[in-house]
Image (tube, rainbow, N blue to C red; front, top):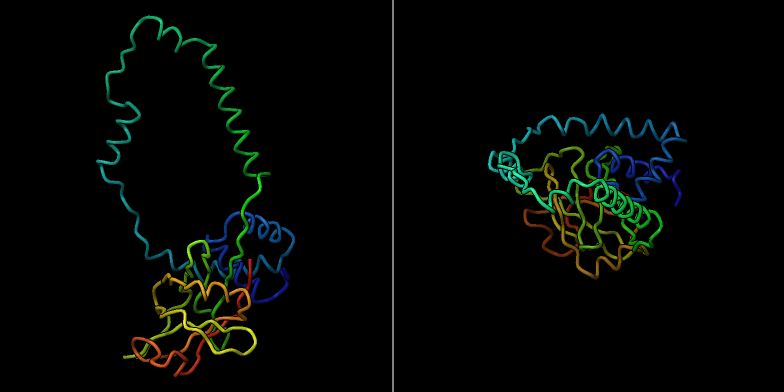
Amino acid sequence: MNYQDHELRQALAAEYVLGTLHGRARQRFERLLEQDARLRQVVSSWEQKLGPLNEGLKPVEVPEEVWNKVQKRLGHGQDQKLKVGLFTSIWNSLLLWRSLTVVATLVLAFAVYLNLFAPKLVVNQYIAVIQDSQQQASWLAKTDLNNNQIVIHVLNEQTLPLGKAFELWMLPDGGSAPISMGLISPSDNKTLILSQAIVTKLANAKGLAVSLEPDGGSPTGAPTGPVLYSGGLQSL
């Protein structure tokens, strides 16, 4: 993977700031950040762009009934009299606590081993920063091929004329006709379900594009309005 590719760097930085870059991909990116000052500047730029998205979020208070259930499970507020006898002696014995500590340590060590060394199923995922003609990022698209989905994150709200819609298209390699992936919102994140045929063709797609269509989408199955946004598709 060419980490010097401009579009890939922009897409990875945006996903990193959004918190949607996970697992080994995130670890690789963080190692790159330690060595690449310009990449850190790209991340800083995305933090400034995406930071205002958090301003409208309000804290959510946990309902009292949830706290009550938590306290009940922890045994708070209950009469915790221990029966004197063999059970109490065993429970309070140093040997038992040492045994439990050893078991917990073994479980933790096994979990760390699985996380670091056990083979994992690697499924290629794809991301794209969809930009306008001025190279202003408008959406970040990320596939979830485990569930045959693509998630569209709004990076910069767009103005949609009355009676019009934005339609997302996959651009197959080799000059084939664009394939509709569905309608996207100018202001809200959206998840689109992908057919298996589209998922199969993603491996050879060269990018994504957004056209302006009549309300409800293109009536012909092909773009009928101007293509206003586009972005290269990068594999992870």
